[in-house]
Amino acid sequence: MEAHSLTSALDTHTGVSLEPVRRPEVLRSMAGRRRIWTLEQKLAIVGEMARCGNIAEFSRQHDIRTSLLYTWRRELRYVLEAGRATSHAEPMFVPVMADSPKPLSSDVAIEVEVGGAVVRIGGTAKADLVAAVIQALQVQR
Image (tube, rainbow, N blue to C red; front, side, top):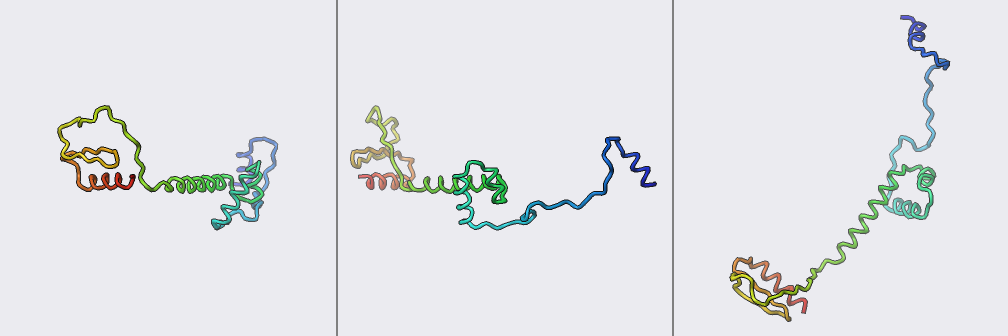
């Protein structure tokens, strides 16, 4: 087939002349290159981003995608929340108020009072659980 017949068959009469495809121009110096960021760099950029009013402009200035900035910020938030959650490592008890001092079932094998707290242990209770509860009550005094 002739090149002219293909051109006329594909022409939609839009008035746009057919030009050969040129090589695309790369606008950014870092485009197509994966960069490795240190933790210090990420923290500095996220800290600077927190003081910035326009995140899109900030990301263009630093040649970083906004989605990556938001990912770094979210990861930092998760690390900070995880650090707060593990600061209460020791077990804590909440006082329980019971209506009746009598056991509700006949399964109670032993009753222990430590520091004003009464623990009723059933015959089917596991020994390691009983030891842990009694030890925790002794520590709370």
